[in-house]
Image (cartoon, rainbow, N blue to C red):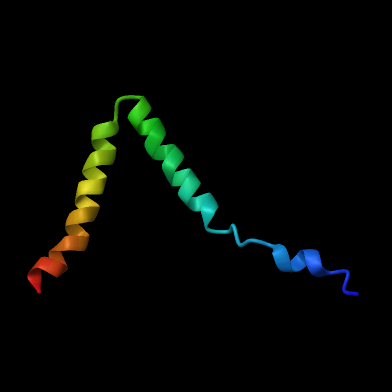
Length: 56
């Protein structure tokens, strides 16, 4: 019997830390009244993504 079966049940959580940190920073900015900054960043990001699609 293989005793190392528990190693095959590992999950890759390396990228989740970055997203959690980003979410916490956005939440803190919104909590202290800088939600407009977060919204502006999201609008800018959306424009960057949509501009090439509209251009085509």
